[in-house]
Structure formats: C-alpha cells, structure tokens
Amino acid sequence: MTDLPDNTMGIICSCSPTGEMDVTTGHNFGSEFNETVTTEFENILEGLNFFMKYHTDLLHQIGEMQHLSATALEIEEAEMMVDFEADKVLTEKLKKGSNVVKFPKGKMH
Image 1 (cartoon, rainbow, N blue to C red):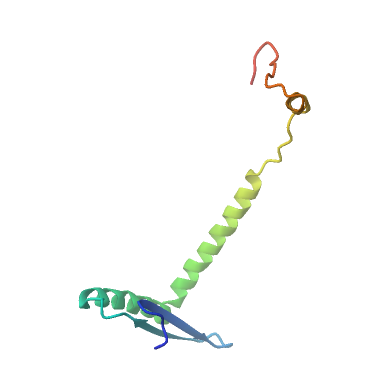
Image 2 (tube, one colour; image 1 turned 180 degrees about the vertical axis):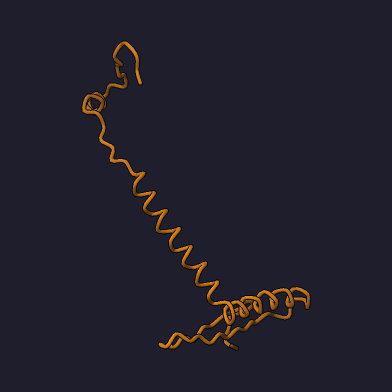
C-alpha cells in the first residue's frame, strides 16, 4: 500500500464470494512524525489487522449488535413521533393578530 495520502493509515480488505477475506494494511507518515508517535500508530494498525484476520467472528458480532441497536433506536424514535395539529381557536386568534389566549376557569391538566 504505497499510494496513501500523507499522514494516513489504511486497511484494505479483499473479499471473495466464498466468504474469505485478505487484509492488507499500510501507512504513509511523513518525516515530521517522530519514532515514538509512528510506533504508536503502527501498533494500533497492527492491532486492527490482527482482529480483522483472526477475530472476524467477534467483529461480526459487534457489527450485528450495532446494527440491531441502530434498528431499535429508529423504531423507538418513530414511536416517539407525535403528529401535532394546532387548536383551531388558537390559530384563528393568531391570524387575527391577537396574542392573548383566554384559558377556561377551573383546573387545567
């Protein structure tokens, strides 16, 4: 992987129709990166590479949980939506330019 933009890391997954995956990683850090910082980023990249090569089942489970969580959130948000329709008396008052709304006497809930 030599065509990466400056100061980036990359992961390329080559996938086959039979379900196999080959993982390639690379980085392109400039000379302004000191050895310690470069090593830290390389360790992160190698950790990702390791998990992608040898623990795809765990990554699959995490991805599936995230998908299910996002789906549940979408359903919950849809259920929370309320169709609002303004009261006709109120809208008529606003059309007439009045900013005073009378409330009935007694308890309001």
